[in-house]
Length: 374
Image 1 (cartoon, rainbow, N blue to C red):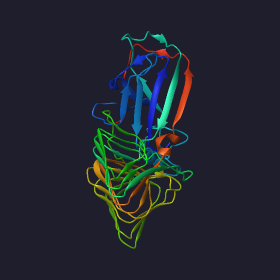
Image 2 (image 1 turned 45 degrees about the vertical axis):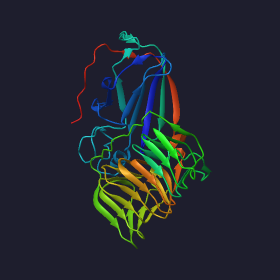
Image 3 (image 1 turned 90 degrees about the vertical axis):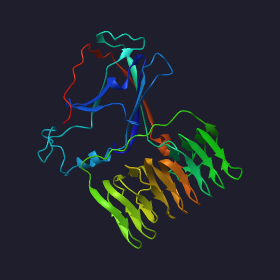
Image 4 (image 1 turned 180 degrees about the horizontal axis):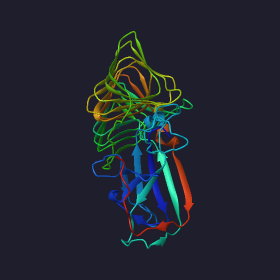
């Protein structure tokens, strides 16, 4: 697995309850890999079930798998020694991220501790989906103005549809001659008489969570990248860290993502005024993550296929281009004649509901922490 995913897990038929401090992630080597501390917005949620006979629901998000995958690929420096999988071929120790074990210290819903011994049988429900559930999403306000529009499409068939939803944790404004082929949802929604929303216009007090963007260690740092007019800058598959990214009008950023995803982590300003050519139009195979608060400006007149995750930045989408994928920002504005087309595969075509009956498992009354990864 190399693409961003959210994992939703529940024990059906076993009514246990827990908090974030009760959940630990180990690998099969016994190393502590992850805790769910406070102050990790968007990394996880724990919610109560609709049926009290089931456990609480744990949702866990990850935005980066591709770096680890590529670093450990065959003939790479961190390829695993097949004779001893605890070591890399270059002689450095291997910490296994492929197989994680979730350990939960839980109580029954009434507050009692489970009895030591075997648990009752239950069904383990695992659901996976992407980070992108709407076309335009704002941690703050979202505005669709001018003659900008949203719609949806299926990247596997190219069929257009009316699911170009706009969602905000604050206000949503659809003004001028703008058109939203989908739903518009926020704490308050304004639709001008000359504008159009084809779906439902609704308010909500339930805020969306946004995950902090953490840059993986060990990925190439390219510094500041400026693609001048009349030039082409090519990125092979992999993950890269940039100080800033500027694609001038007439310049071309070519994304060679046919053999694997290309992921960019940009610490500073992003301005795309030229072309972005992706060999594979699947938007999940070209991701741009803004790590800071600098603006992300997409003002190109050509097609753009990708996902943008910039929950602390102004996200400005304009021009004459068609922007295929999904786009997340702090304050989001789509203007001029920009067309934002949300790939419905990002909403749930990758989702799978997996329910497996689990035979009784041993319950241990004493918990002994294992060593943490240093």
